Image (cartoon, rainbow, N blue to C red; front, side, top):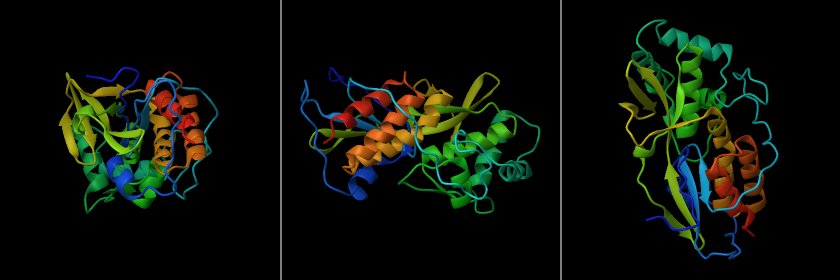
Length: 268
């Protein structure tokens, strides 16, 4: 049963439980009690998103551009899944120009993770853009989804982002008084005939009735949301508010982002 006044949030690609337990730094934040004593719930994903479950929210400004990387050909305001000509050329060398969407997505995923391919390693910690992941060869679920979707689209595939709810346990974990953590997972899907297939770093599977599509506006804002959640867990209240305000500004109608921001606004 859901607690009244809370919004469940699942988005992203970062195993937050590990992040909260092992890498948070700084003084523990506190939250003003407000109208309810129900703890705020911050939802994060294996490398993608972070959300706090609270009923208030506010909208605002834009996140600063990410650092430039040699292979990135995208301007500062480009989508995080934007790929450079060099990245597109790499994908075309590894994936045939024709074939079923499922098979082409599977070939691309394998080329990204295989020892004889790009060999992107799955890691916790932070979400990066497609260009950054391509260079560093390390990614959480969000960063890997950006890279996979960006390259798939460059090959002509109708790749979509997915909130892969069946990939992680439901519920939340108390990480400190007043703050609970919920994890989520982001992946990439393509339709092949009557079936929808979902791919992530771990493999390829058929979509289930619990998986939900994510719009591009929400997917793009996961970077800021995840950053904000990490700041919140580490007690960096001002940085958390700035990042989560950017997420809300990018996708103002997405309730999980607004809930996360509401929790950050109460952080002192």
